[in-house]
Image (cartoon, rainbow, N blue to C red; front, side, top):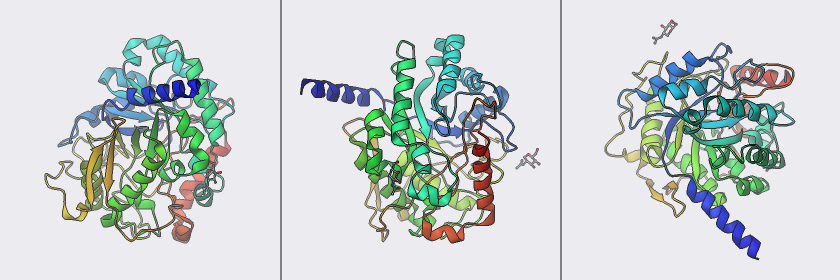
Length: 407
Ligand SMILES: *[C@@H]1O[C@H](CO)[C@@H](O)[C@H](O)[C@H]1NC(C)=O
Ligand SMILES: *[C@@H]1O[C@H](CO)[C@@H](O)[C@H](O)[C@H]1NC(C)=O
């Protein structure tokens, strides 16, 4: 009994130690759209644009990475670290956890960075995610959308979390929040509860755009978002939720009722970002820049890293009436803010479908193959919508599967 009380207290402390700040950032993969490696100058250009976006509702000075390893290197630290130090960008570290026997190379690259850069680097680290959508890729929806997808089970993720904690126990990173990033339906799946028990925060990815068969028009996006968030919150047991990926494409093919367009991307920014997320919960928008040319849906909010985005980032003073069903985010006891809304829409599906973005890897292997990590969402509609997946989308999936096959 005593032990469990102590464990509980420790768990609460860990939860309250995070969620102090509502970070604003974007996701950043390890490679450029042509699959070449991003180097320091590429990351630096990205981070400078992010911080200087015209009319941004805050300073986007945080970044979420997918891997610690520089693309195509044998295990050098990713050059995003240097760019982050130059631009004072906060870093949510990522460890690629799928298709690997262990995360030793990831941890070794991070150790090198800690030893080489010291406090200048470690002071910028706001947390680490062990894995990205690994559980989604082995879920029923994930396997329907990509039967070749390589993921990892909850036992593997829990083990890797332990490996990180052990390796960094006596370092400047020993007290950073340790989380895992996955899609909302994964968090709601009880089989994955051991991962929730093991983390300090839940990284939450959701794309109402991809929720085919569930009324995924832009006007219904707030309801779908709220439902996904609430399902995750209900499973989280009070642990903080960080919104690690969400966004709406500006161009690309329609997906069931979802239409990519600049006005729709702006509406999503206003009704989800402004109304529910920015400065309310830690948020990593998807995305500043596109990475995967095979994905016909383009999520970038700006072209060529211009600081003038495709649409005006100014948040509306008055929440548009179409979001009137969405309530104001409320502070939870853990200190995390929770977007909430009535969600009183007709979407009463089982929730087994997934809104998801599946970034391509950040993986690295002994074979010396490339570190990926382009961070491009892969359409993951429910089975009902699979018939609507275009050839282009299958092409994108094949590219990803092919990437993993190399590993
Ligand atoms: C629930 O999670 C487990 C473990 O990750 C997975 O094997 C299973 O397929 C998931 N269930 C659904 C409905 O996706
Ligand atoms: C972006 O850069 C490419 C290549 O330099 C150029 O062809 C294109 O016109 C640019 N687009 C914009 C919107 O500036």
